[in-house]
Image (cartoon, rainbow over all chains, first blue to last red; front, top):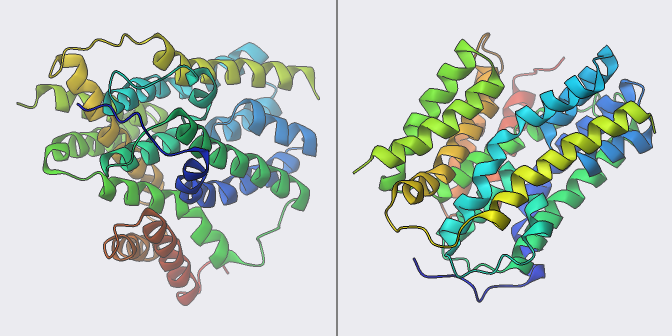
Length: 230
Length: 110
């Protein structure tokens, strides 16, 4: 694998992050709305997005907090939901090459969410060069959209999109469309077994257990399919 | 800010940072090319993205199907928006627009 180390800068990363920002903003907006509906203040809603920065976890955090669940139980539930993220950094660095700098990974690593990982991997697969500044820009575009969306949603309050149900529905589909576009961008014959096994395992895991376990099952089984492939 | 909420957010956020950043910081540089771990990591990306796509549309299909036609049109519009220029932005926006247009055309959502 050739190291892709001479890469684009921070600005190019911001541009690469644009599709994620477009997808994140409406979801974060919904989170902001849900947070104030759950009697959190504007500041508390925004701080959850700043500190946790994980969509599903934040919605669950609202449910746990408002139900009065013990704080440690709530925290460990949220932590368990994001265990899958441990795979992203090593998978990305495998694609980039061993010589690539990761001196500032402590900073850009925070932004390595599902979508940022997918976008970075898709871009690299299409020949994009890697740099830590580019990764930082990519992550920051998504993070800024997440925080600003939350802030605007919490400010707008409940019912902000109620008058526009079609727009609301379209925005709700945006992340699924982003994942599908990312999948198409990295689709190769070699990747098909991992993709197929992941899809089946996700459905099976969700039906048998829950969506959280389904996601974990899909990622692990799909990656294992790549190991057994000749 | 409520102290319980702050502690919960700090613990979850710290763990998220650990899950995302520490594996990059701590991973060894030397990995046997074509080794088991290398193949596992190479397959993680496609597997993760496929998983997240399936997980994002599955609630509309199981346990009770809802808004199936907007979903189908949204998926087709994503393909149509992506292919001409292999554009992720194009695919994402076309998918969302296709979904919203079908939703509106069918008069869903009251």
